[in-house]
Length: 154
View (cartoon, rainbow, N blue to C red):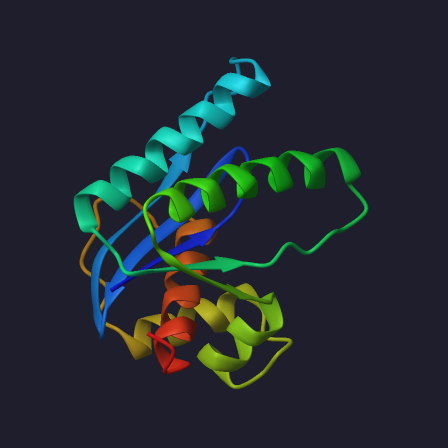
């Protein structure tokens, strides 16, 4: 079983997969009105609860892709550090994947766009009905979990 996380700061995509079964997926959203440190605490507590409930063996996490927004990249790096800490504390094996590796595993094309990734995710695994629209971050986490399970490392 793998916990896959698309790291962010405002919103963190999470998915738990076992073989071809999506057991859980959602987004952890932090309260923008809280101070930075309290938002990091929210992220850690959210990850800890998911690990405790699902007891995954592995954590698959997306490597950071730095764009021009350095302030945002630093916040995401800090959130990613909290996520890695919680996973290590729980004894999970940690695997990191580049955005390109995830796209290749899911679509066969390293420059696939969000629409192509979403379409292939729906073809590769059965997505349970949801009352709400799945956000990009959640779908990215599901794609990451598919990538990890396809890599034969778990």
